[in-house]
Image (tube, rainbow, N blue to C red; front, side, top):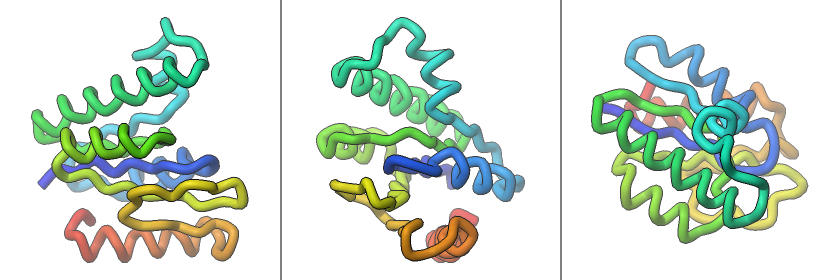
Length: 139
C-alpha cells in the first residue's frame, strides 16, 4: 500500500521527513520538502497567504499523481488552514498528518499523531513516529 506522510507544524519538519525517508527503503517513496517544491513547482509565487495556499495545493496534487502511480510521498510542508487539510484528506486517501508541536504551535488541527518536541527530544519523537507507523503497517 502507498501513503502520503505529511509533516505539518512550524519547525523540524525536514529533519523528521529526511529521517523517515532514509528508513523507508523497501518501497518507492519520494521526499518533497518545502524548499525544493517552492523552487521547482512554485517559483512563480510570492509569499502572501494566497500564494502559500496555492503552493500547498500544488504539492497536494503532486502527491495525488505519485499515489496514482503507486509511489508513496513524504512531505515536509505546513498546511496552516484546516480547509486545505480537509481537501488533502479527500484527495489523498492514505494521508497521515504528523504534527510537529513546538512552543509556537497554535492550531494542531486534524493531525493523526502529534510529536511534542518541547517535551521530548527529536530522537524520542522519531521513535514515537516509528511505533505509530508500524501499527499502521506503513513501516
